[in-house]
Length: 157
Ligand SMILES: [Zn+2]
Image (cartoon, rainbow, N blue to C red; front, side, top):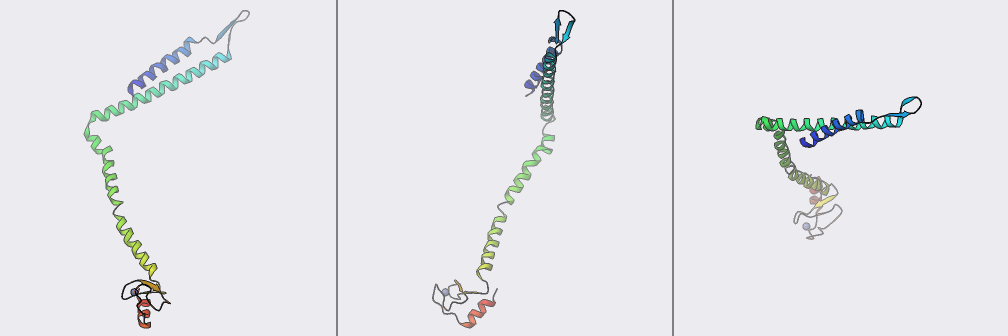
């Protein structure tokens, strides 16, 4: 990364030097001496812009490499404080995700129960199966609902 940055800086400097000095934008005409060629000028400016961008990118790369080296040189003190403070947070949040799942299943079961025992349903006192409130007998075990049991099950939450 640093080598690439230096390479880009070198090529940027060389390119800007080449386009600034090496390109002759003048065109000699026989009569009035030298005339600037607009096409060559625009090519020179483009080359200067590209070289400048190359140079700046190289500077950025070298700067990033220098920052990385500084972090490495300053050692585990900074690293332990700054970047490695993140993974424990992630590890802390990770176990929290499975924890709510039992609660979710519990609440889901409760909601299923709440849905399963509205006032128009009956719970068989023998087998616990749920029948329609209009049913006279349990559809699973054949238990005959009395009116009192039906009323009790209807009142019960
Ligand atoms: Zn039953």
